[in-house]
Length: 546
Picture 1 (cartoon, rainbow, N blue to C red):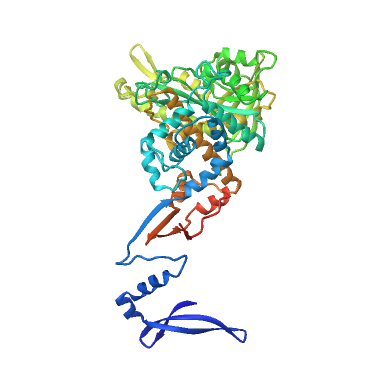
Picture 2 (tube, rainbow, N blue to C red; picture 1 turned 90 degrees about the vertical axis):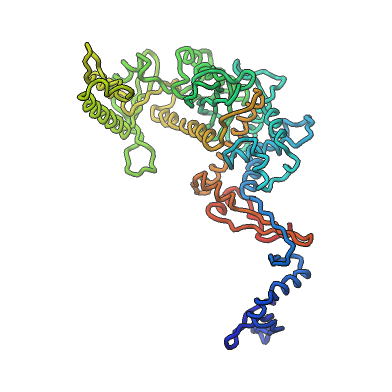
C-alpha cells in the first residue's frame, strides 16, 4: 500500500493505492482519494494525516510542523565506531583493563583514557576543552566523567610501579610501560617477533615549571631555549608500527639514551637480539664501543657525522671505489628517490657512503645560486653581508678585504647529496642503506605527534601526569597507524585531514516527540564508507528506534 499523486485536468489528487495480483498480473486499486493537493497543502492536512497514522506505526519518520512538540539532537558517530573497534583489536583496551585489575577507582579509568585519546586524534585543543568537546559525540560510558577524572587517568598511566627492574637512569618504570608491553605481546601473537627497531628523539617544551623533575633546560628542537623541556623517544618496528615511547628530563643528551634503551628493549619485550637503526645524533665513540663489546654485541645501523668526524671527512669520503646503483632515477615523483651506495672499510670499521644523485644536483645548484648572489653583494661592500647566514661560510676576510672562499666551495661540494652510515651488521651495503632510509617513519611519527595530535604545549605540573599526557598521544598514534595499515591493505591511501572530516560528517540525529524516539543516520560521504569496510565495521542502519 502506498500514496500516489494522480493528475486529472489541471488539478492533482492524492490517492491511497494498493497493489494486487489478478490472473498473475499486478494491478493497482484505488482505496481512497484523499483530496486535491493544492487544497490539502493549503490547510496542512497532509501533515495531519501522517501524524494521525503515525500512532499506529512502531517505526515512524516524524515531521516537524508548527504544532509539533518535538526535539532533535545530532551526535557524531563515525570516529567512535572506527576507533572503538581499533581500541579493542589492537589490544589497548584489554591491556589497560588488566593493569587496572585490583585498583578501585570511583570512575571508569579505561573510558577516561579512551576519551582523551579520541580527542587527541580528532581535534587540536587542550585537555581542558575535552569534556565539552565530547558532548557532540556518542561515546559509551563517559556520561559521569568530569575534567578532573581525565587528569587522574593520565596520572595513573604515568604512576611509578613498585617493580623498577629495567628502569633507565633517566626514567622510572610506570603503568604506561606495562600497557606497552601487553600491547606488544598481543601484536606479537598476531604478527611476528621484533628483529629491527627504529629509534629517534625529539623535545617538547612546557608552558610552566614542567613537573617536579622532568622539565629541564636542554637543547630545544623547537627552538625555544627560553622554556624548560622534556625529551621524548619513540621506537618503531620495521613495519612502521609504534612499539613504545620513552620520556626523559630535558637535559638528557641523545647519545646517553641509546644504550639504556637497547638494554631496556631486550628486557621489557623478552627479545634476545635486535638491530638498532638511529640517526647520527645517537653516535659517539663510547656508544659504539659498548654496542660492539661483550660476547653478544648489538647490531646497529647508525648515521655518521660527515663534517665533524675527521676519519669520515678525510678518509671515508675520499676512499676510492665504485658506487652500486640501488634505485635508478625516475621522472615519476611517486617513485622512491634514487640511491647509490659504496662500502668502505677503514681500521676495522665498516662504513657505507650513500648518494642521492638528484639531491646532489640540487645541493650544487643551491650553492651556485648563493655564490652568484654573494658575488653581487660583495660589489656593494662588506656591510651588505651583515645578517645573512647563507653567505657567511663562503666569505673569506683578509686584511679588511672580503672575497669568495673558493676552497670552502670545493670543500662543501664533497658533501652534496651524501650521507654516511656506520654498521656492524652482515647486511649488504644496499640493504643497510634502505633500512636506514626507513628511519623517516620515526621522524614522521614526531611530526604526527606534534602537528596532528597536539602534544605540546604541556601545562601539567606533576611528572606522572606529564608522562600520562604524552602517552595518550602515543596511544592515539598507535590507533592512527593501525588505521593506516588497514587502509593500505585494502588498497586505499587517504589524507588524514580527509579521513577526519568524512568520519565526523557521519552523524545520528535522534528525534523525540511525545515520549517516542527515532534515530536517523546521515548519509555516508567521501572516504567514510571505505574506512568502515577496511576496519570491518558495519554501517549503522539509516532509521532505527533510539
